[in-house]
Length: 270
Length: 270
Image (cartoon, rainbow over the protein chains, first blue to last red):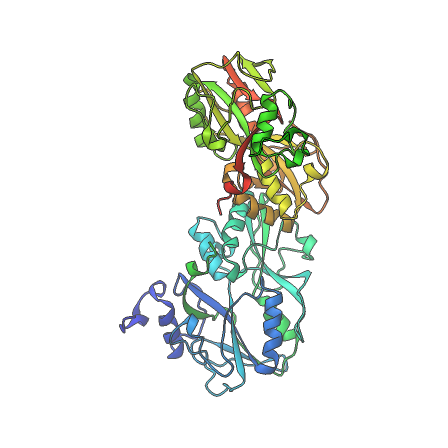
């Protein structure tokens, strides 16, 4: 990597390391959507070692909503496989600190909070597969509408582990039938970022009453000739974690992701 | 291959060459469904050279309904890539001869009809992908009901070529949503036997009025929580050919396919 003044480059010309450096230097404190296109962005969950094993088991049992793409050594703020200089204490633009299951603060770094018993999990995020869908010429409704993807709690239970239990949360993107088939093909190639859809068609079959009223995110229009397609969502582990009322946990703030050096294409299974 | 009395073996123990030999010897004159499991069965179309080029162009433009897996040299009744000893004049249990677009006769061999200007096309058939779906644990409704798959003319036009033009014909198999996603994944691996579905969900969007009244084949029950999934069908080229009112053409009789030495698994793209 060159050492030029990359913060002056257009946002879409940044690479993963440059975005992390901007966050580290306090010059980026918001969303990372659209930054460093082509690079994997991840959800961050940091837990004390005593519950980390339960959480890892939860992820292993629910790989579609919780695709683990990196885990730190206990106490280490580094995950070299995701970025040589990556520092989990500083490289996310905005963090959330949870105490007894309640949001306690939103710091821009974890220097004062880091502890030798912390274990960090990085989970794949749908930004990667949305990029693949768009690159194939599909319209991703939440992107074309410029809103957050609509998310819904379903009637599908996750496989529990330790204190972690709760319903699967899904995202919804509408497509015409032929594009829905194509979307299945494309996202099947990306198991590390939620993979193939978990459902398509009738929302009521998975406990969703009204597509116009998502539990998280924003509603998007669904045309009469479109099929709603549902993918497992990274909000699932966050919802499950909140429900577990852990004494202490740290996550990224919504939309302010950990940007890695891994290219999206490297997550493709085929 | 051994030279044992293979006609005495159970039907599901025959290989492709054994089925062809039974047909050749006049001891098999009916359907080939369920015979030689694991081996590719093909639709047969034999045309005079003067229209064969148009037909090949039609297939090239419509690869989903018309996946060509073999073409003979003009005048040759052999396609060695599909079977070393394969003889197109004798190895299909029952043929249909068409004159001026009308069914003229149903011979059990073509010895008296073969001409030096004939070109044979073998097109993939959905038996191969149905086998892959069942091997994966999915229920294929027409198989579990023991009936012919329901087929429908759609409002989707094929790309025309020469005298060949007409609507896409599709097969329909109902699945629960999660199985529909899996069926897309599995059949995507088999582009040589119709590949991924062309449509799923609302039949009216592709011009189908009533799933209970197929244009060909038999109706199958569709449960309330199931989605109809539609694949391009090998009946398409037959319907198009009939509509073209060719002076002379030969096909296999419905269900009495050409059984090859190619294993279904060898058609898998991945």
